[in-house]
Every structure is written in C-alpha cells, then in structure tokens.
Length: 157
Image (cartoon, rainbow, N blue to C red; front, top):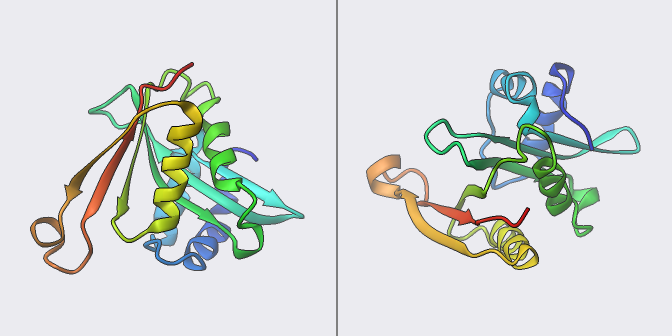
C-alpha cells in the first residue's frame, strides 16, 4: 500500500470503471486525487497491478473528519479484507492522524459498502450514525439513488 502518484491516474480510472456501482470519475478528476489529495488516498498493488484504491479528503467544513470518497478493489483481490486494510493504513498517515471521525456516503442498496463500514465501526468499537445526505429527488433530480452519510466515531486513537 502506498501514496498515489500522478502516473497512477489511468490505472485508477480503469479500476473504478471495473467496480460497479461506483460512479466513474473523469480521468482528470482521478489525476487530481492522485496529486492534490495524495496524502488522503491510497493505492494497493498486487504483483505489480493496481488491486485497490481508496480516495478521501479532509472536509474544510469538518476538519476533524476524513471523508472516504471511493473504495475500489479489483475482482481478483476481493474477499481478503483489502478495503478495510487500506482505510486503516490511511488513518495512520500524518495527514489523517488527527481525524476523530470517518465519513462516507453510500446508497441504501450497496450492501458491500455498508458491510465494510459497519464492520470497521464494530472493529473499532465506534458508533456508526446514518442520515440521508443527498436525496434522490432533491439533489439528483430523480436520476441517482439517495446517498446516505455514514459517520463513524469518535475513533479511538
């Protein structure tokens, strides 16, 4: 597991594209994540291939939080706990150590993401609170399911 580089952008774009139901970002967005947000993103490699990706950032409006934007694990690397290990490795980085809460958004039907975040909350002994953040009709004009915010914390350090 390592900090991403600009040259990882194309591999991240391919990986996210191979991991529905993730929303594919533009290649440019992925390049920005790999550069401007490199301290809060992580790449996992397996035999020279990109096996996993977690993108995140520290929200300016909530400086004690780490927001996890996307978690992608290649089909070949699934079922080994890689997603959780990437997030935990990220939480150990200097840029993130002061975070007291982990935030993310998940659609209601994304069972694998809910299992990941519920499992992390249980492992950390931290509460997980849910609330609708971006609603289907109000924020997505009916074109995307409601995104539920999951807030885990406070995190024991």
